[in-house]
Amino acid sequence: MRTGMMLALLLAALTARAAAPEVPGWRDYQAGRLAAARIAFWQAAENGDRVAAFDLAMMDWKGEGGAADKARAVYWLKRAAALEPAQAQAQHALGLLAERGDGVPKSLAEATRWFLLSARQGYLPAQIDLGTQYFLGRGAAQDDRLAAYWYEEAAKQGDAGAQYLIASMYEHGQGVKRDIPAAIRWYGRAAAQGDVGARAKALDLAKRESAGRAQSASSGSFR
Image 1 (tube, rainbow, N blue to C red):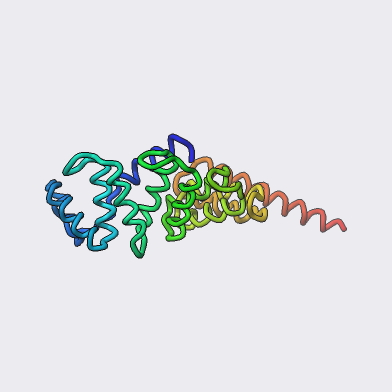
Image 2: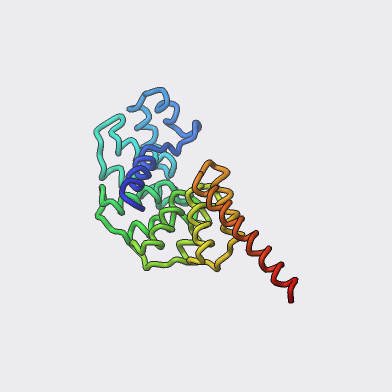
C-alpha cells in the first residue's frame, strides 16, 4: 500500500464508526454528549462489547470527550480485536498503525498479520491491503498467487480497484493461469463502476479475442 493511499485508508479506519443505534452510548454520541458516550462505551467495552471497545478506541484516538490518547486507543483496539468474534475493523486499523509505526512499533510483518486476521473475516479493505503486502513482498514473502487470491476476494465484494488488479493478473498470467475471458469479465465489472481505463482494456481484449478466433476459424477452413 503506497504512502498516500495508506494514509487515506488509515484516516478512514480511525474515523469509522462501528456502532449501531442499540449500542449503549451511541445515541449520546450522535447527540454530541461525548462525555456520556465515552462512559457508556467504556462500561460496555469492559463487559466484553467489541463494538463499544472499537468506538471507545476511536474516541481516544481523536480526543473526543476527553484528551486524545493513542496508547489508550491502541489498548482498546487490541481488546476489540481479541474479543470473540474479533472486530475486523479493529484488526485492520492495528495493521495500518503497525505499517506506519503510529502508536505502535513499526513492523511490516505485524501489519501483515493483522491484515490477514481481518481479511479472513471478509473485511474488504484488509483483503486489498493484504494482497498488496504479498504483491510487493512487504512484511511477507513476495507471492503473486496469494496476492491474486486476496485481490480476487476483494473484487468479488465489488471493489473496482481490486477488479482492475485481478483482471490485469488474469491478462498477464501473474499469480493465476492466464485467462483472457476472466480478464475481460473483471475489467468489465470495473468499467461498470466508471473505471474508464478498465473499459478501454475490456474493449481492446475483447476485440483481440474476437480477431484471434476469426483467424483460427479462417485457418481451419483451408486445411
